[in-house]
Length: 119
Image 1 (tube, rainbow, N blue to C red):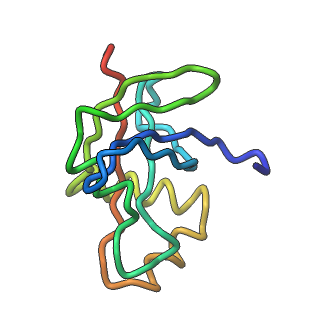
Image 2 (cartoon, rainbow, N blue to C red; image 1 turned 90 degrees about the vertical axis):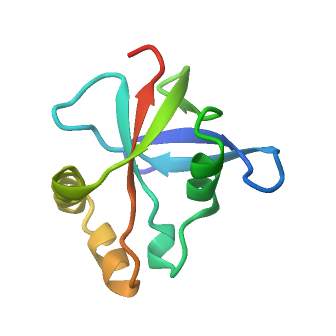
């Protein structure tokens, strides 16, 4: 998709219990690590979080990604404080559209680190 790095996030539905998949843009962590991926729960600046974010919160032990031809079980970590601020600045500098999303909503747009269970 236009050279943007994508992964497929698989979660288990918070209410349905069914597997859900969604393509997401991912960003490198800082410092970059081969087993860490950052994703943004923007939903285009909507007033609510995307469903996949609620699924992560409800079933954090049932999260997988497909990235660069690999299937990886991951643990989600929602960034906070200075770690969040640093990641958000880097993400907006790479893709300015996220800054516009933040202006459209009153909520803080979450940034989630996905960490391989093998790390």
